[in-house]
Length: 496
Image: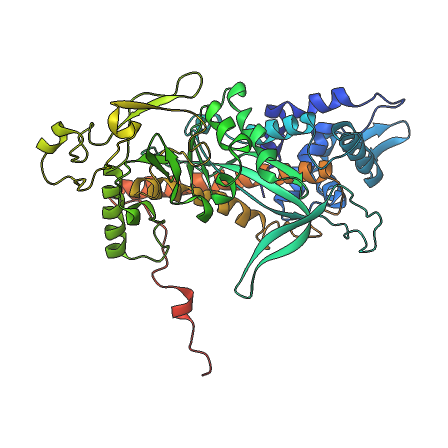
């Protein structure tokens, strides 16, 4: 459970309470429950492992010491004596907030005011010393069920018209995907920069969208708006569910915002995909037309590969890099850049480039150059327009060892949903929030991730203190115990 001071500090630092109060219409009588106290109460209820119910928020507030209740307005002096906050007052204030932040015509996407409030609350939960500790973000989306039953099969309305049917993975061998009724929850989590210090995996951005909308273009504007708020974008780590989208929905806006993509490629996007000026387009890069087909069709290293297999795979990707056209310039204002033949840059030996034949023989040699050389072989350099490999181009060559090490940082995005769905803390399954509609669900989910960030910070501080004590005793930092065998190997043999 996080202390009340931490919840109040996050609410005050965000400035969300006065922004919401300014949107609420003034009533005849002053409300006893302020928006500031309501937001702090939501964090307190979720920090205690309680579900996202307004009754639990009310219970958390009235359970505070009497002095804190008076300070927060939970206990107020009325004309006939002291009056403690009632549940109907909490319900009334929360209803005012959701109506002020919601859309008049809900469409399954959060309005700008709601998104800004949630961004401010989540960003306020990141301490100042970690705000510039890393510019890398790991992104992913997960399911968020609605408490409402789906609409009848014969047609008709339901309690949550913004929700829709979506797909999720159930991690069972018998079935890879299943249907659910609700929303997609997208989140961006801090990850350590390449060759940078470790950082706590704090959630910095989230959004909730109906399953009738693609979660990727719904989350892209949230990320591209971060530089305008003084948060530069570095590496964006994403799986193939993001990289497979059309460039206008994901890759192009993020590159324009200054981000460097590190992403897995969908099986349909891997391998050779046409040519440009004679050069082969493969895995987001341009390669010599004489590149062996087996190298161009290399896939990522299997998850269970041993060291010998990893070394063999890395040797093949290193040989593939020899055939890659070398980049000579950065992107100009229109997104164009220039590349040169690998033989001209001294990476391979080719008879079409006589100077390259004087290179050492440890480099690959083109034995059968094309009879009618195209521009990539005849010219010193070629110009690459932005539409070439716009979807698959990324920071590291795919699937090289450098890409694999960099992409491994994306596991933090998986852990943020694992902790949010942990039944021992806050299980965001159906029934976790019994309020319907995108606005209340997004507000409670934001409060949940604010609380999760506080837990992560507490664990981070405890681990740093433990490492300091071990260093004073001359011991190395404590490392996490890793599983050395699979669960299948550890299980007892079944019946024949």
